[in-house]
Image (cartoon, rainbow, N blue to C red; front, side, top):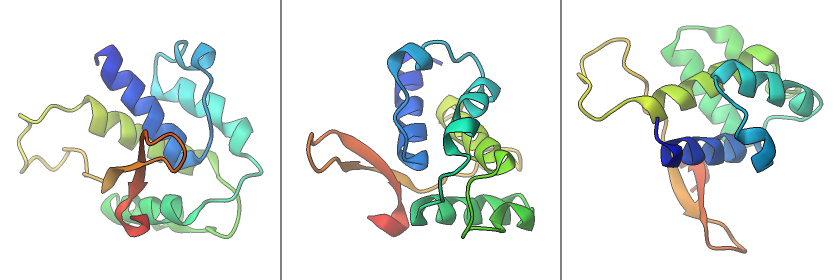
Length: 130
């Protein structure tokens, strides 16, 4: 993964979870698990937003794991954080030459850039919020 891909991936993680990851922390991430370990205590009391809930519903359906989609009225659970982070890593680390019929190919979650209201920088939101 190039540094540009990594920065983009961190930006998507920030957008999906609604949290800012300081650069000093982001540069230390070497795996999805380290990101999950960093996010979990910061999201423990934070509720899922509509975009995150939609993303989890799609992942739960794709992975045939309905327990991921339970408790949207509550706060983030570690397994929910982990599945979203892993999927972001898979999508951002896969190349376009992969076989589209591969059953293990990453699901393309509809996250598309949207301008940030103040800075104009791209933001990533699921299709339902655009």
